[in-house]
Structures are given as C-alpha cells and as structure tokens.
Image (tube, rainbow, N blue to C red; front, top):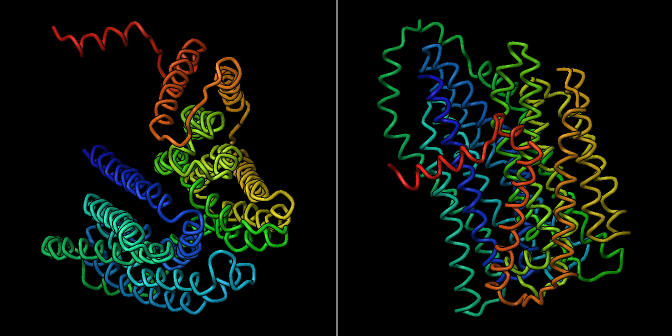
Amino acid sequence: MEDKKMLKQAFTITFGNIFSRILGLIYVFPFAALVGQQGQALYSYAYIPYVIFIDLATLGIPIGVAKFISIYNAQGDHLTSYKTFKKTLLLMLGIGITMCLILLVLAKPIAYQILGGKEEIHNNISQVIAVIRIIALALIVVPVIAVMRGFFQGFKQPQISVLSQILEQLTRVILIIVSSFLLIKVFHKPYYFAVYFAVGSAVIAAIVAYFVLRINLNKYRLKIGELIRKDNIDNQTNKDKSTIVIFKQLFKYALPISIFGLISSLYLFIDTLTFNKAYLLRGDGNSEIIYGTYAFEINKLVMIPVTVGIGLGVSLIVYISEAYTLRYYKIINRQINKALQTCFFIIMPFIMLMIILNQAVYSFFYDYQNTYGSKILLSYAPVAILLCFNHITCSVLQGINKERYLIISMLVGICFKYLYNEPLIIKLGYNGAILSTVIGLLCTILGNFLIMAYTIKHYHIYLVRRLLVIVIINIILGGCFYLFNYIILPVNLDLSSRLNCFVYLSINTLIYIVIYLIICYWLGILDVILEKKCDIRKLGKLLKRKIIPN
C-alpha cells in the first residue's frame, strides 16, 4: 500500500512538472512572433537574472521542508513539522524581500553589463532596468509559495502543489499572450510595452498560486489540528527542537541542492552578461537579435527533448538513494545504464531531425525570415545530449550522497564556461557561446563519471558500446534522410507556410521513427531498453484483441 502511495505521489508530481512545462512552451511561439528578436532578448535580460535570484532566495529549502516534514510526521510529531513550516515561511518571506531589494538596486549595473557598457544597442538601458525591476517584485512571493508547496508534499498532498503550479503557469501564459496581442495588434504600442507586461505576469501568476495554496492551507488546518492532538509525543521533546536546530538541519540538507540549481542557471547568465559585449568587440551590431534567437527561441526548442533527461534524473534519485543505502552497487549501475540508454534512445532521433530539417523546424515555430534561427538550431541541437547527461549524472551523485564532489565538478564546468565564453564569442560568434557551454558540460559530466567509477565501481565500457550503436544508427539513417530530402528528391518547401512545414515535418518524423524502431528491433536494442524480449507477433495479436474484441 505504501509503495502504491509513493508511486502515485511521484506520478502526480512528475505529471504536474511536465504539464507545467508544456503550458510554459505555449506562449513562446505567439509571443516571439509579436515582439520579435529584440523583444525576446529584452525578456531574457530580465528572466535569466530573475532565475538566479530565485535560486538564491529559495536555497533548496522547499525540498528540505518536504523532507523534514515527512520525517517528523513519520515519527508522529506533527506539531514540530507544522512549527517547521511556519518558521520557514517567515524566513522565506524575509529572504524574498531582501533579494527583491537587492535586485532592484543591482538592476542598473546588471543592465550596463548586459549591454556591454553601452547606453543602447537595440534596447536601451532604461528598458533593461525596467524589465529587471518589474520581475524583481515576484521575488517577494515566489519563495513563500515554494515553501507552501514543500509543506503539502511533505504531508503527502502533492495534488494541491501541482494544482497551484498549473494555475500559476496557466495564468502567466494567458496574460502574456492576451496582453501582447492587445498592446501590439490592437493598441499599436511598441514591443517593449508587451515585454513589460510579460515579465509582470510572473508577479500576478505567483499571487494567484499563493491564494490557491493559502485557501487549501486554511482547509487543511483542521486536519493538522486533529493529527497534533492524536500524537503521543512528550511536550518536552517539542521544546527541545529549537528554531536554530530546525534551521541547521534544514540548511545542511538544502544547501547542496540549491547550489546544484544555481550553478545550472549560471550557464545562461554568463551568456547574458557577456554576449553583447563580446559582439561589440567583434564589431557586429546585431548582437541583440542573435541573442534573442539563441537564448529565447532556440533554447526553448532544445529544452523540449531535454525534459526527458530531467524527468529520468528526478525519478532516478529515489531508487539510487535506496539501493546505495543497502550497498546494492550492481543495481545502481544497472539503473544508471538503463536511464542513460533510455534517454539516448529517445532523444537521438529528435535531435537528428532538428539537425537535418533545421530550416523547417525553425520556420514552423518562429519567423522563417530570421536567417540566424536555423543556423543556431543546427549548432545547438546536439548540446541537448550533454544537457540530458548532465542532469542524469548529477542526479546520480545526489542519490549516492556525493553532493560535495558534485559541487566541485559543476564549479569546474562553470569556470571553464566563464573563462572561454567571451574569447570564443569574439572569435566564433554564437558558436563560441555554444562551444564554451559544451566544454563546461563535458568537464562536469566526465568528472561525475570519474566519481561514479571510484565510488560505486561504475564501468562505462558496456554503456559506451550501446550508445555508440545508437549513434551509428542515427548517423546512417540521418545521412539517408539528408540525401533523400536534399539531393535525390529535393523538396522546394515554402517556409512561409506553417502548414507546409507541419506536413513536411510530420511525414519525415513518422517515416524516420518507424524505420528507427524497426532497425532497433532487428538489432535487439529494443529488448535491452524494455528489458524483455520484444515480439512483434505477440504485439500484433494484442492489438488485434484490443481493436476487435471477441
């Protein structure tokens, strides 16, 4: 029964995260069409520093709250778990207000750094300062709602947390799309007005989520009161758990997690601070158009397959933690290999299609007239593999309690990103930013694999063989598709028509996936991925029974 509850809770949280991400992608494409690359750049100037400050404001505490509330509840000490929540709520409110004030003050120097010391490129300094200061107000509310979600997860009520998350994202998406359309198409205002409202929607959406959580918390208080009355805990025990002790335990667990999230966000933040400056030194005045395409449009597209790696990484932590506690290293190695193989197996076809059909993919989602879009997608798409591997290997180190080594490997990666980013952008343009990201991620991933090899005796030869087979299959299949689409039977595709792009992409994707699955079935790769013998005849009989019941 407990296993079923755990799986149900895990499924609810995972579903909420995936659905929330899908909602978050909905606004991207109409918003990009309305505000253009300059508007996207302006939006990213606000959003990326905001994510950094959110990581600093929350410090991984919401996850810590969920963990310690569940521990106290398991001990029958619901009073301490509720006290922990209330004290942490006040702490996060104070931290949120402090971070908001700091970002308001730092908005001007950050804006100057973003624009490479200039008053204006395409966006001017006052516009960049304005978007940063508008989104800074969300820092007052977001840490508070994060702790409230941790509280409900700790009390095994993830559906309330997920509901607030979905409603927050839905509110944000609706506000961005509606306000942008009205301001630009109806009232004919400049694009930056739409961006102001778009970043402001984060504040309104956070307030909506807060009220959803507050209403549910008020309803849940009666049940908490009943649980506290049923506890058979001596009052002295509760008094012994002082605020200092509670916060000490909380920060000890939460800080490594917060550093992991913070370092992950720094990759884009380094690009934000150095991109325009490097392009000005390069003598190119189109930096904001290129940055908007790179950091907003292409990054959103590439993150679609990366969600597979994120989902596998999150689910892997629980199983690896349990197996590591019992010292079942063989099980851990098998789970790591399965997660990496499954991730690679799923994302490789989509990455290959993004590379081969880059013009059609970009034109379907964004403005086909942007000459940079398809070129950046061509260069950036393979990075999705490293991003997935980074998430999964970092999750493994968290699962085996090697957070200290994880932080070191991530810091090494981010240092290489910082050192090489500006010189490589000056020399190679946007490809320099992508290459420095690749260098940083490779350093972290290789470091993680070395730590895994030393700690849990993880050997990579079997894994490398399997991954190489998948790579070779996709390279050969991708080469055949390239020859067919561009040399043997070239298609003169009208990129201005989204319908044409959709039909073209759908046909190619369907054929590619079918051939890919047939090859993988024939070579036995599907048997390895599914961990069982894959028999097409049995599958055909099963489908026949489902479609034509007796």
